[in-house]
Length: 159
Image (cartoon, rainbow, N blue to C red; front, side, top):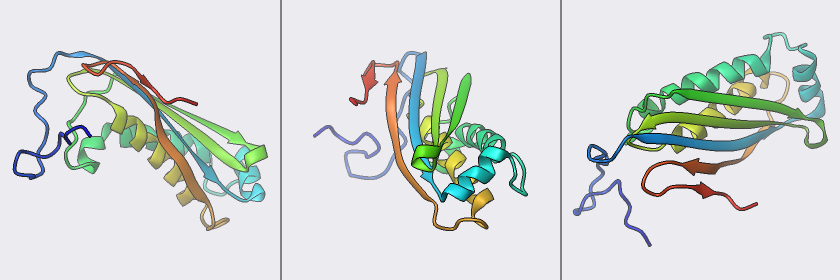
């Protein structure tokens, strides 16, 4: 097993030193879903929710969260994102909303955490906005799909 980079030789938590790493284009995509009752999904799709445009608010929340990743995950570096894109797709057959987030930056460290945080917060925002109609919603399948850039290069989840 590879050594965990967030611990020093004594096993104490540390922020990884990326100072000597070259700046390269980093890109990462993540996905996830929120499952709900069909009636809740219809409210979202028809724009009939009393709180307004659920998917629009969730998209903005995901973008904002990606920019604050270093404040949420203790040992993450503050990465100057050049792009964060959030796709939200209602899926009637699954009674769910699918989310995919893609983050990009020219940096010394990757943007996997930014993509994952964006997905989670976008989905949690949907939960928050719709919980009065459906407290049984479930988030699942939150995972990294791919990443590129840096010393470790390309990685893609096998389907």
